[in-house]
Image (tube, rainbow, N blue to C red):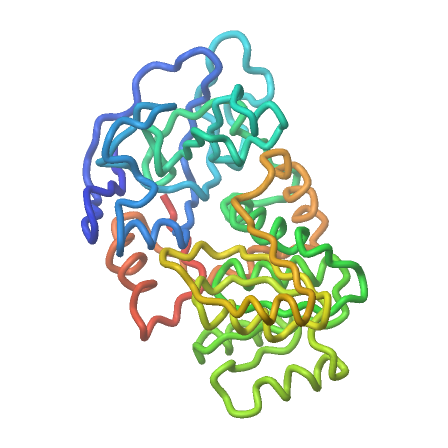
Length: 353
């Protein structure tokens, strides 16, 4: 079967690999339809292996080379006999890719996304969504509600990340929110904040192509953090106070400074983007402004039905963040390389399997 396989830094190959074998108890065989390229995938491509194990993973035994893809929707083509009744052959499903041990301290507290041995389909599992078939545990498989498409189903995973980041700020209807970074997570955070009742949404994004794309979403104000008068413009939009809450989605030190300097006193910031290197902050600012920073890791695994239901209402139009749709054969050149280019016009790239 076809698969996009990570071998080493800057070495992803579209190649023929053996299809997965017979199902184990509690497993489901699915055929991916759409799969997104995540920022985590890009970090692996440019700087990895980071998350992808080079020694057998303690929970799954997986090791590079690794079939990529953890943001995907699929069709169920086989279920293990006995013990799987949540989905049936032919169902259109979205995959929640996190794999937890179930017995560590965080898992016993139902914080499965913080499992000490956590693995992830498409990063530390025998397969991934950038392939023709993959076996997954049944607890990862969620039937899409009526009216939710496979394309939308492939966006549930990054939508859950964005939603968790906004939720952790404590955003209330009527609040203002500042979002640093207008990539896929930032755009989804803006759409979710709008659905959650934010009165004013401000997105800080230096890339002109992404600013234009975000303006097309019509979720609020889009401003260039490098432009003269940026801070003054931010204060003008927030009655001179700063934003009530902020979400850092840029994975840059500059973006983190933007949100810390852009919230009001006693403001709350959620750090969603994963920084691959340390970032400097001013601790005095935290004290003087009485600010709080929340670290965000993935999403509660039980959020999947809620996010899918919100998409089904039409209030969370996640499909609007998709800027490019390409075939699997073009995944490296038109997907990974395009997204890594400084001149890229892409926001969210979906690969149609």
